[in-house]
Amino acid sequence: MKVRPISPADLDAWTALRHELWPRHSPDDLRRESVELFRRSDTAFFCVEERGEWLGIAEASLRSPARGHLEGWYVKPEYRRRGVGRALVGAVEAWCISRGCTVLGSDTDGDYPVSPAAHRALGFREDGSPLLFRKELGTCANTPRLETERLILRRFSEADVDDLYALLRDPDVNRFLPWFPTETREEAAAFLHERFLDTCSLPSAYRYAVCRKTDDRPIGYVRLAADDSRDFGYGLRKEFWRQGIVTEAARAVVFRLRQDGVPYITATHDVNNPASGEVMKKIGMTYRYSYEELWQPKNIPVVFRMYQLNFSREDGWTYRKYWDRCEHHFIEELPSR
Image (cartoon, rainbow, N blue to C red; front, side, top):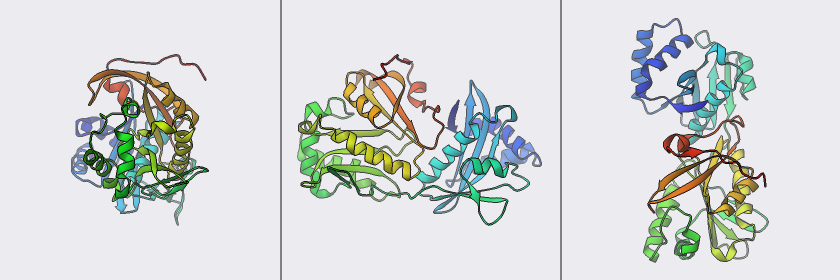
């Protein structure tokens, strides 16, 4: 079962299920409306498919800067009670959070026959009427300050360029990272802006400097990608390896992500870097599959293992973009410990 955004190429299949959802409207009217919806920037549409068949759809829009709305939600009768609806609503929630929403609204009027019980099962509550519902999506934040027993996790600043340069120029640290070691302080400053400081204006982002409490100077980083992979990444200066620092920092960020309503995270590691996989397991992530690709920008073939942790998605749901993109993909039999 795969959840994905609906594209203009899906117009026929989308229109067919929209007609099942809203049978009082003609297919031609729904098709024309669908074409118009694709032109808007404040809407999103998702489908669940399995072996080429569509099982359900969901549509959402922004009603205000902080409020999204579940405009339509439909699962074919023969596929209900299989988690399809939960997967669709999870995708809508993720999209709303990415747009800065803290509330998701919905309704059950005559044109939208999803039962109140189904809404309540997914965490909605009545919003002033038996036919209106809302769900709190958590507080979106941009790198809120966190503390652990030994660490401060905070935003990077301009003053951190030298400490970041110390990490980026080390070939051992950067061996398994998707960039080459930085050769100059100027390159490190550009990296600091592109990867960290330039995200500060976003409504929601997680780009942390990992600092010791003793001096509040960065010795590493933890970050979450903003795209649908929600790739969870980290790096640490070599002199601080094997002290549990990355695991301690990552656990704190994962706890915050769960609080903020992020639906899931993924992470990948080179099979030749099993220590990174151990961190993934320690923070609750589970192995899903492996894939081989020509890794850029280093242009070398690499086998990656993909791990995932679901917060508001059903436990069995797996992000499949790497699997679908790479011809050579497989599932390994890994030891439990």
